[in-house]
Amino acid sequence: MEYRILLLIVSMLFTGTVMAEGTLNKDTISVRVYFRQGYSILESAYRNNGTRLEMFAAQFRALQADQTIRLRYIHIDVGTSPEGSSSLNRRLSDKRAIQIMDYLHNHTSLPDSLMKFNSHGINWEGLKKLVSASDMSYKDEVLEILHTMPKQVLCNSGIEDECKQQLKTQHGGQPYKYMYRHFFPELRSANVNIYCEFERLPKLERPIAIANHPAPKVETLPMSLESTHTAPVSAPRKPFCMVLKTNMLYDALLIPNIGAELHIGQGWSVGCNWMYSWWKNDTRHNYWRIYGGELGIRKYIGRRATKNPLTGHHLGIYSQILTYDFETGGRGYMAGTPGGTLLDKANYTVGLEYGYSLPVNRKLSIDFTLGAGYMTGQYHEYLPLDGCNVWQSTKQRRWFGPTKAEISLVWFVGRNSCNGKGGKR
Image 1 (cartoon, rainbow, N blue to C red):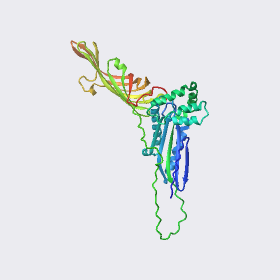
Image 2 (tube, rainbow, N blue to C red):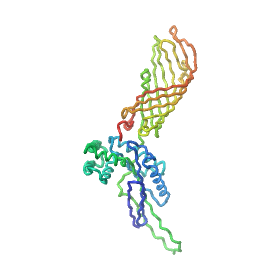
Image 3 (cartoon, rainbow, N blue to C red):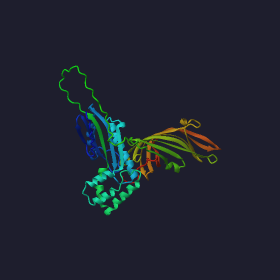
């Protein structure tokens, strides 16, 4: 039996085409989805993404239910439009690919081992095709510039920047503005192609008696797709995003502090803070002592938060534990039981917070946060007399109201961790 494989790559809207010769068939189902400028979030309502993805998943499940089908591989092809820096576009392209893979994991049973991945960064090849098929002004001159771009420019951002600069200055920027309006939205997209092989078994006629002859030996030829040159590439890991921070209000009050916050996905983060100050002057009866920590969970919301982790508006819940001893030459206040353990000496707080994280540059932000809740715990009042601290009263704190204020300097840790400040991509 002669086998022949026809490979069809459908790159535009959802299609599913089957071609066959003999009993061996090749089937390709494809979908194209679009992203907003500078965004990596896969929005179902944007440009009818949701409808196409639902049709794509439904057709895949129908093919998968057919036991004569053997799934070969899934190819994900992702790119961005040219505006913005090359490095930011490469990261944006990777984030968009992660969104596509998450969708496939959640809506199909595709194994990771069959996924092949191609993240272009700026999709120059796609732009060449769109320009070639158009009737735009100065078309030949634009193509001449685009054809100077090598197909692989991932290690030479200068080539891309030079090409973009030429396009922006050519004829007063008219061709660039035309492409920005008509072509760039098409480049902010991802193609997903699923390639299947299957053999349609012929319908059997009515069974008839067969003489005692040995069944003919059927030779099965091994199948391969060596003619395809796409090599499996492991999917990129979800970007690691973590920040270190210090509350500048505490720093101004001579209370050193440090905090950390880790993005755990879908706009959620967990964080912890620690402060420690143990200043004292026994002769003047000056004590400025406090230490304790905080644990919290935040949810980042709003447009900026969907674009870059740990930026924009956020809501959260937090819990604090602290002990203190404050005296400035007069009446002093000491938390908890003197000489006891940390738990004996501690006051406790639980509350809700709201804040906004404002990017300063790619690695720094300023976070403004206010929190209110309930604080409780025992504390003592004392007076310094004859070189001793004389106890005056023991009280129980029960406080409803503001319990937290932050103006924090935030630093994004890691090579690929940033707040996205730096322009559209």
